[in-house]
Length: 202
Image: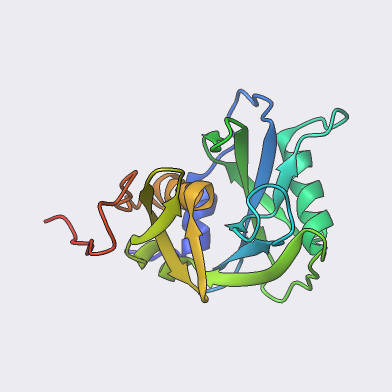
């Protein structure tokens, strides 16, 4: 039996959906094309109006002149990280996701060279980092507390590279594992409390 690398499997499984419905925003899930692939992630600036300080994929809102979700994802990735669009080998997309504020976000998946040169746009991005795709797949869901006016809720999160990945970004990764690698990651909507310990289902 021939063992495929993770990037080969992604290339075989992912496609672009036939109906390219226009999303409100798009992100680029950029994965290094190497034996131990890594996922490009950013930490948003603490000074932004929305999702400040959160880990996310490069991406942003559609402009009126944008012709496709792919254009949005590539342009925003270039603006935020200086990633050259010509360095991205597009391989497919993932189902639309809805953000907390109701915005429809389209994830676009592409492969990038492992030695790609990047530079953070300081008004938008505090940090660019890479997380092992395998480590993300295997990371157990850890409770992350989000405080609301009258209560705290605990959402599942992944802890990688000294960062917390949760919410929309985490859900997109879970979708990437499912559709691109046929890997079902246990990902509840909410966790009960910080004492929660992940048990693999028998």
